[in-house]
Image 1 (cartoon, rainbow, N blue to C red):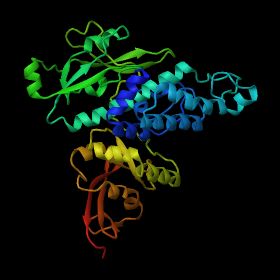
Image 2 (image 1 turned 90 degrees about the vertical axis):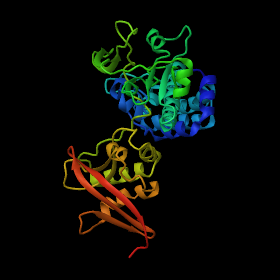
Image 3 (image 1 turned 90 degrees about the horizontal axis):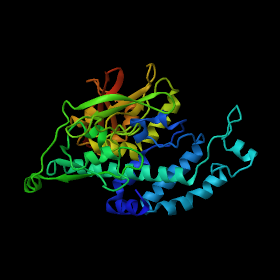
Image 4 (image 1 turned 180 degrees about the vertical axis):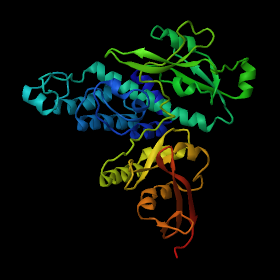
Length: 381
């Protein structure tokens, strides 16, 4: 996806794309293989960049670029001076600067700096994922009237053969295949999804495929000697190897949200983390998706358990829980858990000046989860 294509994509409906990219928290990792699939789609990292402030700078610059509609060359021009100042641009630094930048390990090996080629990959991959995540949310919202989704590839000399073979295939929006092969399906993948209603299907004589019985998880070898799991689609006409996303792209970025399990971390640190993320865009996106984003979102902390977290599960939202609770009231969940009063019926209650937030907690699959939540506008007693 070149700068012009990204600019056009951003110009369509940028709000959901910006929300997705902003909602990915910055994280430090080693090789890109440390963050395959769900984590790759849900958290922002730059492979082998070991300084969180540098990763955060790159992340913030991409959010700004997406919001402003910057092309690749414009974004690169803006971020390179920051990378140079922090010692992460190519090898353009002294030994002392490289050491200060955290690019020299205990054995004296110097980590690779960022190059124009790597910046292009970072830009294109994140812009495409953000745009397609936003498109997915919009298409799901219209699925009742436009339930037929068509995989659409760019047919030119750069198109991967497997992506070319997928071009034009139509599946219902709720076909399980979209969990794995909703684009992008690899680095620099330019594929899209088009939607149709029944009238358009009939007029064009289009047929719907199904992936039932034609999806299988396979192991793909990686350059570091390990393997990654990807889902292979073996439909008619797909050839002996079928179609499968590249390692690291075996999940739908628009369908996933990722938050860490709190585990046995200190309660004070966990509580600070929970309050920050519940007040941020990732929680808003998770709630508004109503179960389309899969996972457990930490919304509170407790003591005396192996896992200190209290979680809001996507399955509960999909089942309709808290449908009438305003987002601003759901963001009071950390307070409900920490200072809510236990009522005679066992529920936790949190009185606000304009109403009552009431919820129930229960253990589900080893995690303490919110299993009921309601908001009642009324005057405090």
